[in-house]
Image (cartoon, rainbow, N blue to C red; front, side):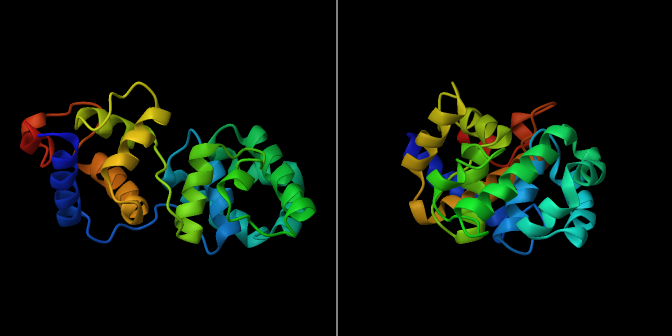
Length: 205
């Protein structure tokens, strides 16, 4: 099978196992998603989802987030790890939103990447999940699966993103991104992976 043929089979299987994938991070608008994505760096979605209700109860807008300050934010988000650095970034990000973007989260990938604490992957998540614009964020799960499934050489996430965008239709990127993560967590894990037990790996040969 070539990459396009593999992608077709993979998409079919992903639709069988996860036809309606849900966004993993709890949020109510683009700003709360942006903060949740920032917190998810080197942390699990489950941990972030335990922390954000308390945080957003106190502050769910840039103005309120600045008013409660770094120390209070750090105290709340401590379970997420790197909490001091993240608290600092949250305040700086919120200030920039007010100063440069009228307090609103920008819809443009390039603008999002100018915000403190927001890199390419994080910006891509916000673009696709908050604004339904085409993007294919590549995390460690997707990077692993793309290499394992022969869709990319796996040298780096930048190349993996390019390779995946070539074999999947643009309008489906956001959905497939979520499907691949969900599939990786349940069926195609990094450790103790058994090819013959994976519904996709065993079909790819």
